[in-house]
Image 1 (cartoon, rainbow, N blue to C red):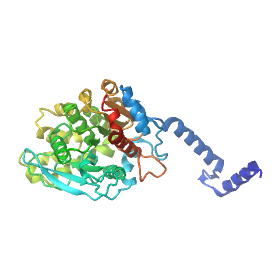
Image 2 (cartoon, one colour):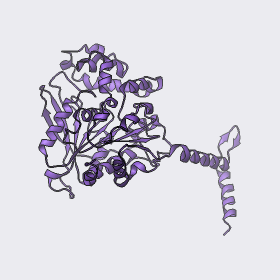
Image 3 (cartoon, rainbow, N blue to C red):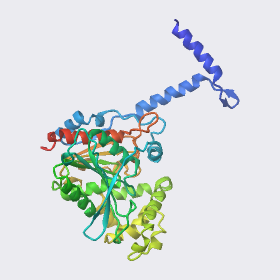
Image 4 (cartoon, one colour):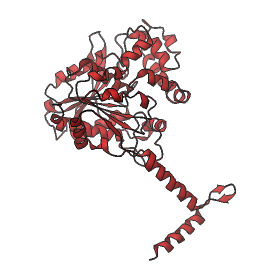
Length: 406
C-alpha cells in the first residue's frame, strides 16, 4: 500500500468535509493540522517540564528519586487548561468526588471550645489489619475547606488503597459544629493543631503518624513544625500550595483580575463561615463592619488579627508567614508549589532558605496553579498533586528509616 497516496487522498477528503467560515472562505485541514502541530510543539517545549527539586540534603534527594519518583518526572498539565488561574478555577468542578464514609468526633479545647475531626478508619485494611499500628495521616484543608473538599477526598482515596487511616482536622466553626467560645482560627496560631496532634497520637501511640496540609492548612502545619522542631510525634509532613509570604500573597490577590476571580469570593466565604455564629461573635466584634469587608485583607484587619490579639494586621501577616520559620523545621517535609500560583507567587517561594535546612525539599512546577495540578486530557480521577501525595506518604511509612537518620 502506498501510504503517501493514502494520506494525500485522506487529507483531500477531510479538507473537503471540514469547512469553517472564515471571511467567506473555507479553512483547510492543512491549516487546522498546522495549528495543532504548532500548539503541540509549544506545549512540549514551554509547558510540559520536569519540576525543580530543591533540597540541600543529598540523602533526601536520593530517597525521593527512588521512592517518590514522580517529583523528578515531567509534569504534563492538561493541554487545554494549563494556565494557573484556569487550573485553579476548574479543579473543583472537573475532579471527581470519591465517596468517603466518615466517623465524626468532637474534642474539647483548653479554652472551652470544640474541634470537629472526621475519621476514615479504614477498618477493612488488609495491609494493616491491626488498628493500633495502622499508619495514620492527619489532613489539614485550606482556608474555608473541610473534609468534604475534593482534594481531601482524593487524598483519603489514595490512602485507602495503601491501607492507611486518615483523620481530617476541620477548623473551628467550619464543619457545622457550634462555636462554644468566640474564637475561630488563623494560619499563625497553632494551639488547636497541637491539641489535635496530641489527641490523635494518644489514641494510637504505636501507629506511624504523619500530616499533610493544603493551602492555609499547609501554612498552619509549617508554622507548627517551625515552632516544635523535632519535638513532635509526626514522622514527616507534606505541604501543598502553601502561601509562603502572606504579604506577597495578599498583594498578588489584590490585583484587579485576581480580586475578581478569587479574592472577593474567598472573602464572602470567610464571612459566610462566621455569619452562622454571629450571636457568639458579636460579644467581641462589630459584625456589621466585618461583613462589609470586600477583600481578605479587610476581613483580617477587622476580624482575624483582632481575634488573636495582634497589634496590627502587619504583625499578624508576619507571624503567619511560614517562610520565617522554615529554618526551624526538624522533620522531613516535602513541599509542592507551582510558580504560576497567584495565591503564592513564585518569587515569594523561599528557595534559598529551604537550601539551609536539610529536612526540607521543595518541588516546584512551572504550571499547576493553586491546588490545581490537573493532568491528562480529562483530569477527573487523579492529579499530579494526588500522585505526589500517594508516593510520598507511602515512601515515609514504608521506607522512612532511610531518611530519619539524616
